[in-house]
Structures are given as structure tokens and as C-alpha cells.
Image 1 (cartoon, helix red, strand yellow):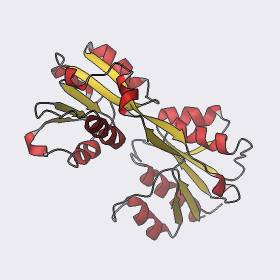
Image 2 (spheres, one colour; image 1 turned 90 degrees about the horizontal axis):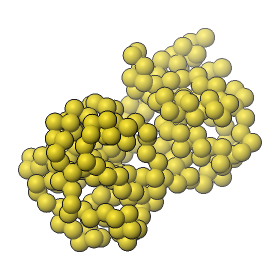
Image 3 (cartoon, helix red, strand yellow; image 1 turned 60 degrees about the vertical axis):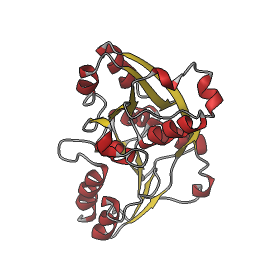
Image 4 (tube, one colour; image 1 turned 30 degrees about the vertical axis):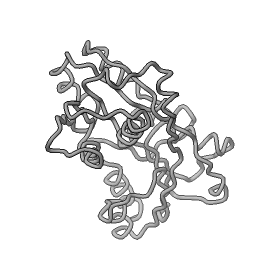
Length: 248
């Protein structure tokens, strides 16, 4: 069955040169973006209840742009002046780049991984005498605490925001050729919104092993996977699949 429509379970990219827009034009497909999950920030008093004193930490681990936003939001609510000496450990270049929204990049000590959390760990290990704070959501990949515990560093997780299922009732009678998921929470949202969801001819695209596992546990057949050696990004995986099926 030829691919004409795709639903990506994330917000629409804000950059004009997004590979999704390029894919849409090149393959003549329609791509819609609807976030299946969203985040809601905790209040400063709720963070304090976790016995978090920001002044006690010399380094901060940032795994996403949400963690950047909510760290600086909570710091402001607590009237905490973020010191210039604070070290930032960013999981990816995208997170590090986003950090510039809040700090003057060249004047800060910033260490950047490539993509996965394990790729950031050598930098953390190098500075193992620091006290690390990990601002996160209530949904944290198990590999993060496992890696930090394995490094033997002093660290604390603090929940600064919650991951919440979005209301998708507007999509009840809308059908797509491909549904694209990036996290187990996205799969959870699909079935919380539509408990009677049947895959039928819909193709499922997933990013990451934990998302594949969540999809298969719900009885979904995964048709498109990323990252792989040949398709390291989701757009590349979609492009490869569309070219194969639309040529038939």
C-alpha cells in the first residue's frame, strides 16, 4: 500500500530546513505533527519537597531541551542565581545549542555527548569529584541512573516536570498510513486515548529499542525502525521505506 499520509507524534519542527519538510516535498506525502505527550512543570515548592538545594551542586546533567527550560525556570522561581562556575553536561549537541538561550556559551564550562547518554559518560567520569544534579521528568530512561551509578559519581535526580498524556480525541476518525513514535510514553498515549486501537493496514515507525519494546508489548507490528546503521535518523528510515513501497 502506497504511503500518502504520516502522523508524527511530536510538535512540528520550528526550523524551516527540517528534514521532515524536505521528505514531504520530495516524496509528495502529507506529514502532520501532533504531540501525543506534553510536559507540565512542577512548582518550586514541589521541587523543594524533594530536598533539592540548587546551591549544593557544582554540575548539572541536561538530557533534553525540556530539562534546560525547567532547570532555569525553577532556578528563577527559587531566586537562585546560577553561578558562572556551574559545569553543564549536555547529552547532545542539540541540547548544548539550546542552552545558549540561557547562558553565554563561551563563558561557561560545557561538555557535550554525541547522542546517547552512554556517550556522555566519559566526560562525567573525568569530573567524578563534582556533585551532579539531574533535572528530569517523572519518566527517566533506566540507562541514565544505571550509567551514573556505574560511574560511581555523587548525583541526585530531581523531578522538575511531569510527562503527561495529551488529549487526542480530535484524531478519533482520522487515519494515517504511518504513525511515528519516539518514546514508550507515545505508545502509552495512543492506547490511553484509543483503548480499542487496531493497527490494520497502518504502518508503525518507532525510534529506539525501548519504544520498539513498548510497541510490541501492545501487540503492534513495527514496520519501520530507527536508528540503524543504514538509517540513523527517523526521516532517513521513513524515506527509505516510502521509496520502497511507493515504487511498487
